[in-house]
Image (cartoon, rainbow, N blue to C red; front, side):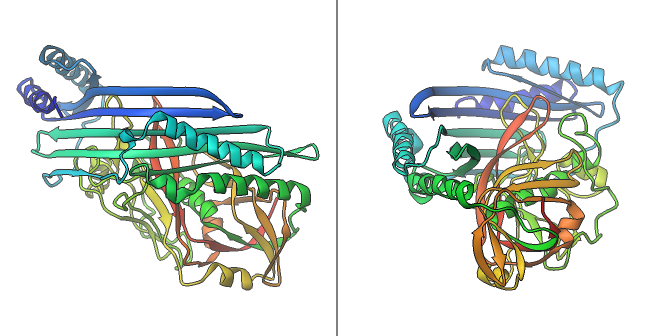
Length: 471
């Protein structure tokens, strides 16, 4: 990157002005976006952004500021302003303490088999057009068709006064869709996302035209033949898509240490998890949930976080026991532990926050068929269309999309929009078995003020939940 020397100089200048700690995060991002709405190309953009974010501590108080004017005079002015902000805050705020972490030096990247920058816009639009063609070929009434593909590549360089220097080059590809199907004056909607860190070759793995054609057919059948879900206490088998959103919403978010400390209450919500719950049981021993940014080709992939801490797999729940929280250097100091590499920012002009990466249930020993076979009366929820969860991530609500009645261990007729509505501890306590068919699915996760949307993955295997009353 052409401005690495400027980032190096910025932290030295900050120290000269009295900063006890400083870090500079330089980012350059180039990307393309295309939107096809009901067959019409409604949006396209070509973006290029670059800038420097500077975070520093003075008298135990942290200040953050950024600039996209990349010359020494402007960076000097920016550092002086950050020193001024931190100094003013020091008179009002509690003293900041960061956990001690190892010095890290690393340069890493993801290689693209087909480089995103080598694929012309016509080919990207052509993929959306082919998806549209396959949807229309189903002859299903789909009055709403929103298709969005975007890609970007980010070069990032982070340096701090502890001597760490991390350089990375990460390409991302993302596809999002929203479909509305109409049948007999009834409508059903379905939105989903496919994304990963990698090149254009990923589109071949996703098989998007065939996938979306199948999606509209399934939605149409559910509207035409779907029956009401069974009454009373039944068992559920949910597929990896549903398992994933459960992992993200009811484990990933409430295990963010800044939420647990009350730091995110006004922006993103609180947590039902409390500081003294490490070591407490929340699920049966068959349940283990992890957050692992090091998995290749996932949307939440990284090897070092935005505080230059090495990333690792984190066991949030292990064998049913709450084991650790997602930490950055500030929260780790509060909890008397080390950071586990969960500090991320969406762009150079945003301050890093405690964030999820790839959050999922570890799989079990069953096949999905075996989970279903042991259900006398229940519902198989293959996908969902809506979810809601409160600010503390305690009360969960998931509305099914493609779902089927289970009778005596066999899949029967479609079931229309069953609703799971449980508290997190009740839901986790009802999971008695997990399959061995793990899948990973992409999402964009929001947090902070101003809002930071970052790429993440959620997933896991199919799971069985016993004794649920469906809405």
